[in-house]
Length: 125
Image (cartoon, rainbow, N blue to C red; front, side, top):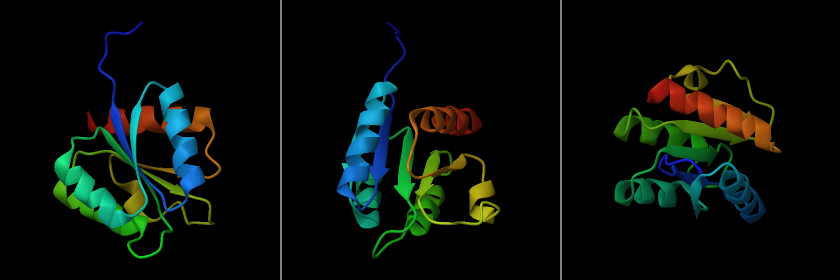
């Protein structure tokens, strides 16, 4: 068993099933996950709790994941962000080229999530 501290992840997605699936995948990978259903909840949570990574869906009602990404990067420039989408998205969007930001397509696979988390952490820590 590793003595490394467990990393805390904030998961932002308006779909209950996606949040629960991500929580299970993250637990399998050794992460602790806090789950919220909206962008405003996410921003309030990052003000109160330290996170190692934020995972946000892009297409949510109200505040989109793009806004979550922008606000997190503005407030905490070194906080890694994984953006999730199930829609067709131009992966060359400049916001995705920022250091410490990575795109993962839904449905999320364990191996892909693990690689994305490792990559985004390596870019920022």
